[in-house]
Image (cartoon, rainbow, N blue to C red):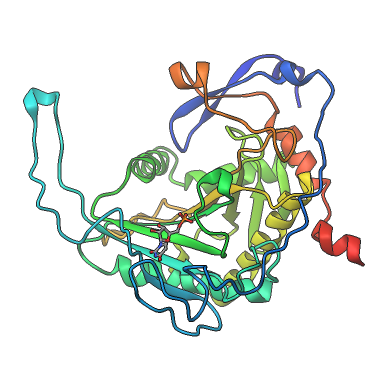
Amino acid sequence: MPESQRTPHRRYNPLLDEWVLCSPHRLQRPWQGKVEDEPEDTRPDYDPSCYLCPGNVRANGERNPAYTSTYAFDNDFPALLPESSAGATDGGGLLVSGPATGRCRVICFSPRHDLTLAEMSPEETRPVVDAWAHETEAIGSDPGIRYVQVFENKGAMMGCSDPHPHCQVWATGHVPLIPARKLATQRAWLRRHGRDLLGDYLERELEANERIVCRNRHWIALVPWWALWPFEVMVVPVRRVPDLPSLDGDERDALAEVLHRVSVRYDNLFRTSFPYSMGFHGRPTDGQEHPWWRLHAVYFPPLLRSATVRKFLVGFELTAEPQRDLTAEDAAARLRDQGETRYRKARAQ
Ligand code: H2U
C-alpha cells in the first residue's frame, strides 16, 4: 500500500458514486483483534418453538411441511403487498409520495435449526443457490416486479429474528435506491468505456492482488477498495453473469463453495458466529438486457475488533460522510490469514 494511503484520504466508490473517508492512522495503535470463543452453542437441531422448523406452525397459523432441503414461503408479515391503494402526492414538491407494490418471501436454507452457511458444506449450500436463482426468476417474471432483492440478516445484532438459517426476498414494483444507483453507474461506464465496470474493476484487483480474500475458478471474494464496513466483502463472478438465474451449474457449485469459505473465515476471525447482512445485486427484472450489469454479492458485517466491539454509524458518518479506520488491505489480509476449517471443527480434530 502506498505511504499516501497510510494517512487520511478519501476513496471513491464508482458503483454507488460516493466517497468514504479513510483514517488508517487511527489504527496505528496496536491491533486488538480479540479472539473469544462464543459461548457453547446449545441450539438443538430441531426447536419446537421455532416458526421456521419443519412441521411447525408459523405465526399466522399455517403449518410448514416436513421439508428436507430448502423451503420457501410467502412472508406472513410482508413489507410490500401486490396492490397499493396509495395515490401519488406532490405537496408542491415537498411532500412527495407514490405507491409501492411488491412481494416478500422467506427461504429456509435447511431443515436443521442449528446450522449456518458456515456450518453447511458447499454441497449442502448448492440447493440454497438454486433456491435464490429460482425465486429470483419466478418472482422476477411477474411484469409488475422490476427488482428482486435477496438478502440474509445473520445474527441478533443485525436484527435477525430467528437463528434458523434463512434469508428473505423482497421483490418490488420499482428499482430500489441502491440498485438504481448501480444501474446508472454501470450503464454510464459502459457508454464511456465500452466495457462493464465490475469486469474492469476485477482486472485491477487481480493485478494489485492486495484485497483478495479467496477465490476459486468462477468467483473472487475481495474487500472492495471503497469498503465502508470493517470486514466488508464483495463476491464477483469471473464471467460477466447478470443475475442469479443466469449462473450455470458449475458456477452455482463454485458460488456455494466460495460463500462457505468466506463464512468460515468470518467465523474464525473472532471465533464467533459472525453477524452480517449480505445480499445479491443482479440486474433489474424490468425485461431489459442491461448488458453492463455484473452480478455480485455484498457482505456488510458490523464487527470491528472482537465479537463484542462493533462499528456504529454515528457522529461524522451520520452528519457528513461514511468513514473507516481499518484499511481494506489490512482487513483483506486478516481474512486471508484465517483457516478454512471452522474453529470449532478444527478444535475437535
Ligand atoms: P429476519 O430473521 O431477517 O427477521 O426474517 C424473518 C422473516 O420471517 C421476517 O420477515 C418472517 C418475518 O416476517 N416470518 C414469517 O413470515 N412467519 C413467521 O411465522 C415468523 C417470521
